[in-house]
Image 1 (tube, rainbow, N blue to C red):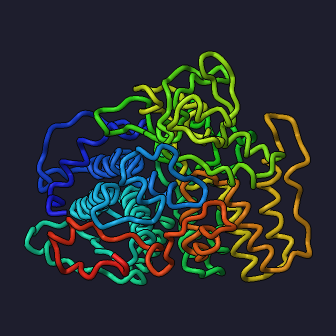
Image 2 (spheres, rainbow, N blue to C red; image 1 turned 90 degrees about the horizontal axis):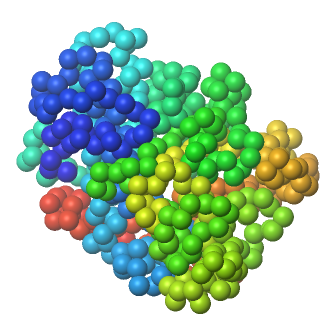
Length: 510
C-alpha cells in the first residue's frame, strides 16, 4: 500500500484490461497536475476497471479462491500449486500467494477510486456536472470493500488518497460494522447519481447500485431493506433496460454477451492480454486435461484440471435441469474419440472422474493464448436473476408465504425450462403453502444451481453459516478441516502485517 500516492500513474497503465472502455493514449503525468476536466476523472475511473481485470484480481487470484472455498468445486490436479489447494481444504496461512496478490490489487482499485473522487472535487464543478461521473468511483470503492469485508472482516478502510508514507504505516483496522456503513453510504450515493442505463454493462448504472445495496443488506440480514432495494430494480426493469436472457446457455457464450440485458455489472475481458493484465484464466483452470474439445468448438488446448466439481455435485443436480447441461461438461474428446467423464483419468492421471465446469470453456470467443487463457468472456458480477432471488429470499423473511416471493423464483425457473428454444416441464413452478424455513432452503438451493460456479456460493455459505452442514459427511464436499471458528474469514497477509504491525492481531486461528 505504500505506493498508493502514485495510483494515478498505475491505473492509467492498466486501461487495456476492459474491452469496452476506450481512451485516448496519454503521457505519464503526476497526480498533482493531472485533473483538468471531467474526462480526466473518467480516465482514472476506467483504470480501476482495468485493475479489476488483472490476473491478480478477477483474472485468477480472487476468483479462484472464491470458487474453491465453496462446496461446488474441489481440486482436480493435486500437483497444482499449494496456494490453491490450501483454499480448497481450508489450510490457508497468512503467506498464501493468492491472498498476497489480490489484497494489494484490491487496494490499488480502491486507491484509484479515491484519487478520482479527490480529483473531481478539485475541479469545483456543480453536482450535476461531476457527480454522475464520480458515482462510478463510489460504486467501485463499495464493490471492492464488499469483497474485502466479507473475506477478512475488520480491514483498513481508506476513503482518501494516501500521500504520506509514514502515515500509511500507522493505519489500523476498521471494524467490519463500520466498513459496511461506509459501503452502504457509497452505494446510496451511486444509486442517486448514476444514470438509468450505460452504453456498456462494464459500467455501473443506478440499478447496479441498488442491486448491490440489496445484496449488502441481505448479507447483513437486514431483510426489509434488501427487499426494498431489490424491488426497486424489479419495478423499474424497463427503465433500467433489464431482462432475463432467453436461453441460459447464451449467458456464457462470449460472442453473445455484449448485447444482453441480464448483467447489471460485468468485468469484461477482450481476448488479448499484455502479460497478465487483461488475461482471464478460468477456462484453463476449469478445463479437462488432454481434451481435444467437442460440440464443434475451436481447439484451444487442454485445460489444467484445477477447479473441478465433485461427483456429488453431478449426482445431486437433477438431470432434467437444463442449467446442469449448460454448466457441466460430461464428455471429452481424446484421440478423436468421444468419452464419458469416467474415462477422464485414463486420458490423464491429472483428471478426476467427474463432470467438469463448462461455463468458461465451452464458448470463450476469441482466445489470445492456449488453454483458454485470455478469452473475451464477460464475467457478470451481478445478474438480474440474482436480484429476483434476493427479493424472494428477503421477502420470505419479512412476509412468509407470499405469492410475490413465489413469482420471483418462478420467473427464474421459467427461463430454466427453456432448453435452447424447446420448453420443458422442469423445474416446476412453486406454489403457495411452503413454510418459511422450507422456502428459505428452497431459495438457497435455487441460488446454488442458477449461480453455480459464478463465485457466489462461498458468500452464501458464510452469510448463512452453512459450513458444518455443507462440508460435513452429508454435504457435496466433505472437508474435515473446516473450522467455523476460523474459516469464515481469511488471514490478513503476512507481508502487510510486517509493514504495518498496527493491523495485528490477525484473524482468529491464524
